[in-house]
Length: 316
Image 1 (spheres, rainbow, N blue to C red):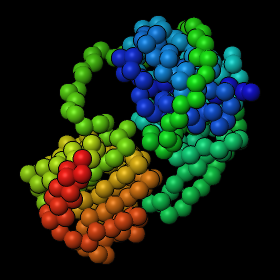
Image 2 (image 1 turned 45 degrees about the horizontal axis):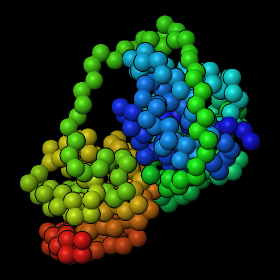
Image 3 (image 1 turned 90 degrees about the vertical axis):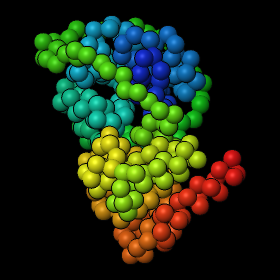
Image 4 (image 1 turned 60 degrees about the vertical axis):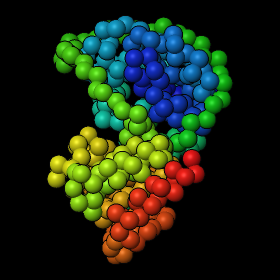
């Protein structure tokens, strides 16, 4: 069975959920082989093996994490040459897609990004045009390189050997062209990360102001959800741009997405259309968002959202 390389997203040795999703997807295509870049693999080995990593290629040299993106692409290119995998999977994050692009150039391979599902034969599924059309695509040249959206595939445990193999790569001058000079740890609250959350509650123009986002936060906290915002809300300064969901913001694909006071412009839909279940609260019955949703509530968000929060809190 051919290997499927999976680039592991991790922070300070902690495996991110998307890596487990990629290992799950890799099992449909062949034998998953995790690729770990940087120190900290010792504490993550059991988790990766639990979710199907038959092998774990560890490039522990700390220098590989001292530069921006390029060393990961160089390492993967070397593994593609040495191991002849059937495909390479990365997360469709900003960094992951850059790695995918660089790797495609280095290996002369085709690349597919923003994939929402994978089937045998490395057939990738995309959801486009606001979720109105589903397409399937395959790479015709080289080793398929696939960037999968976080939260698109539910992680499933399937214990494997997790045999560790040390690997290394010699970096070129070009790979060292951009060095990381400082890392600042952003303070995190108790809410989950927006791109990895299973539930997201987003507010839009209808929220009416920064002070009213406490309604969105209250509903999110009752569900243990992340908070998002539309471009209109972030451009108005009501919520930080780092929480923007949309084509020019972050792409999310949670199990449940609740859009509160969001009209549903195509820019926003592009960032959340692959959510498994979508609920909208909007006083305008003709709002475009209702074309996309599974459940819609036509009503005043200032009445509906607090009542919903209250009912959820009663049942917790």
